[in-house]
Image (cartoon, rainbow, N blue to C red; front, top):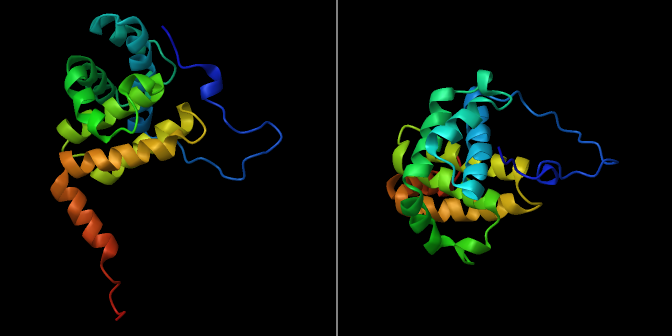
Length: 176
């Protein structure tokens, strides 16, 4: 299986220890990470869906992941790749081919979740995309991902996005 480059996983300098302790990963976070890794490989090799699923099942952490979600994401992105990329393109400031393979997969996963995983809150989808980009993407890739996914959400989840925007801009109770 082709995996994301090792240097894309670690971005901190070795002499600058992190003061932040990461919370334990949820089964759903692991599912998204596994889907990202498997879809990264698929994007480079265009292996069959069954091969991608087999490779994903062999990845470390599969046994602690929400395997149903991981399989849904992989199957959905592979089967609807053209549709998902078409949804993303209007929100990019560069061509689809100019994106890193990691950014491209994260955006496709996010587009799939926005379109299909209606029970997953918008805020969760955006946050998960940002966290994937922080873990696997370039230095400031998470900022780019955040902007694109938010723009995508204004189209794919317009009502939910507008409701969240109104809630953010509403004055707090007791203030005038």
